[in-house]
Length: 106
View 1 (cartoon, rainbow, N blue to C red):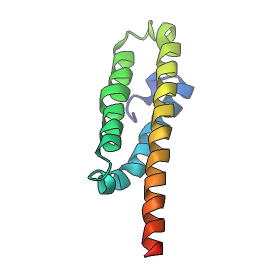
View 2: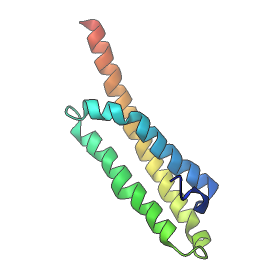
View 3: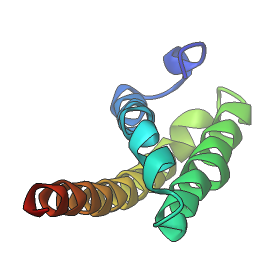
């Protein structure tokens, strides 16, 4: 992302950056709860490695003359990925909050 950011439309770059930055914030927590919540941990991994990265690579591999024609489609895909990432973040936050509350009740 850092090396190629200048090749993305600013609003798309911001979306992609937000997705990766938020995922990095949540990764330690996902590592801790992955044994109890393997589906969500796998879903986050797939979102980043099989959806976000390929979408960005495919767009960046286009000739620069074709990028404006496909920029809206990339932005649409990034918006969907951000919504999916936010859903996973909410699920993880709920799981962590529940664990914290349960420990306080002991």
